[in-house]
Image (cartoon, rainbow, N blue to C red):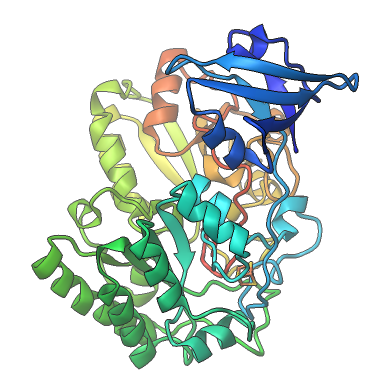
Length: 452
Ligand code: SF4
């Protein structure tokens, strides 16, 4: 059973007078378990929907849904599938007290992997889940592999029951399911020869493995430092060399690099990022792979839309990870708009200085960095630092923050979105998110920003 949260007025759901709180029971007699059933089973042009209204009345709707007409029904958030692993590097263990509740949830949910690109380990699949992945063709899935050696993977996940990943992926691949994969690199465990083995095994699975990213493990002040440490610069360089070897082979044999180092890996290695073309469609950018180049590409594509900002002084808030990389991006924007852009690199006072991603910046730290600035005309904030309710990781609301600061602010994913807006309204930008994102994203599974 799933429950309706809201109904759009100009939609089939609105016409049928389905109201919030209605329980959606079955489609064509098949019980509805979650949003996947709802989406897939109502895709037909005609179906029978059994529902129970909040009054208790049960109704069966005979629905005709011409192609393209929205049902307009938003469901209550699903019960998230919890993780069965206990990784030493789990970000949830590294969380301080007082964060938004979802940040303490260890999700490992293939449904969110399909829908939102959250990484999942596939260690908690029931036979029913496996059937659904194949039946609904949930592809591509985003999978945390970490190591293909079963013993090493089980050790990393701290889960002796974890199934062997290579046969598991191979089984799905034979049934048409494809994957983007990641390896969170833990020094002394799955780097070096093990990394080479893992990359080779994934490559040998053929085209069903669409990409693999190698992401350095990210720890906070509160992580289990007695059990896991971060990579050294030399270890990052060695990992990048392994990535390069496989990418060179993939380029020659498949025409695309296939294997990518996360931006953080380049940063920690002190090596330059590849150019934008390297990343193809930037399919793992949400995982911090090619994010900088993606940003530059977006700005270049939006040149015509960027306003004249001559004489304006614009603050750009970011975390320490992007600090050294951002000047390349800002140079492009400044040249296009004539504005003066100033980077405001904010230290993460909540998780500790080792957490450098902009997506985890607390509102309080941003406020401290900006509160005395009277010289800025407006400020761009990283939109990924707030959830869909525009609340920072430390429960500070973006509009409350804006009210306490002496200049307008705008949440921005890529400058082009927010600057176009600022240009139109001439620095009277309000706080609003330009792009919706998954309400289920949780910054754990060891990667800097992504999951899995
Ligand atoms: S890192 Fe991910 S897979 Fe590992 S314990 Fe945490 S939530 Fe589970």
